[in-house]
Image 1 (cartoon, helix red, strand yellow):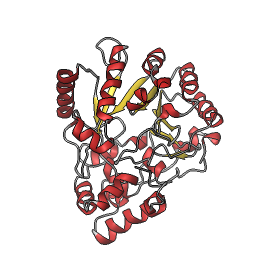
Image 2 (spheres, rainbow, N blue to C red):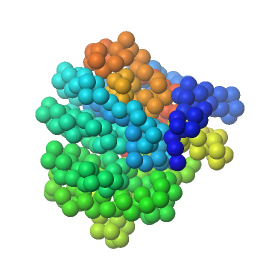
Image 3 (cartoon, helix red, strand yellow):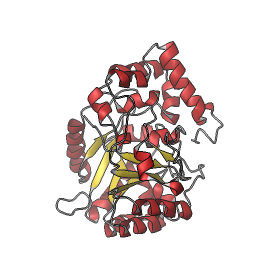
Image 4 (cartoon, rainbow, N blue to C red):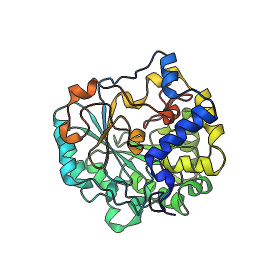
Length: 348
């Protein structure tokens, strides 16, 4: 399987994605535009609060090609953050009190400067969170020591595991992914991750395999903990239930499977003002692999830059960014449906 970009798919064009989302929702389905929903809830324009997270995409290269991937990541994606851009991120961090740096990709570990970057962020006294797809740990010998590296720097590991069975996981992420993920989780557990009292945090991420919203996060967490411990002896801290947003390869899946209209209607009908008030874009600044600034990772993939004169991490200005209005579009319904969705799970 190749990325949408590698196959010259029209949905590889972010502008085309936005056109599809707006026309289908507003014109075909006759559903309200997202900013109209916010206005009705007294939340438009949506404004930022004190930033708590600097989320940095260090590249779109990945050892997997998952069916739901909103990044359209894969082995054929060559976009990689340079050390110079990483230094700009470090300079920006030094100007702020932002406590958490969330490293994502692709597989962030495939960036050749990944370990240097983690070490430099740690020297600034910030908490490092890495979004690890698990299989990267066992993909090549040079990654086998990642659990020890993560432990050395107190990295919080957030790992995607679509389900606690091989059938559903492999259907979404590829053949053999579940088995490799279990091996990697055991390696993380072996150095203390997820173990009570270790202080080494291992969280899992669940997102639905089909065109439906996730179930209750607490109930899913209890199921995952029970089954993974019983069947594989694996422990972890928390489970984050994340709604799939209609972006990139998941948007392609919805259209190809004939589920697009029904899924968007579900999201719109489940709009929750409480979740909208707590969306992650309000306390997060997102940095693209090339240093561009965005309100969130999803806006980043749709090339929706921040509405601010400050467009690049090299020109970082916390005061100027605090005065921006957050850029919203139709995909934002995914973060405000039901209990809401963020990179840290539900918000309401």
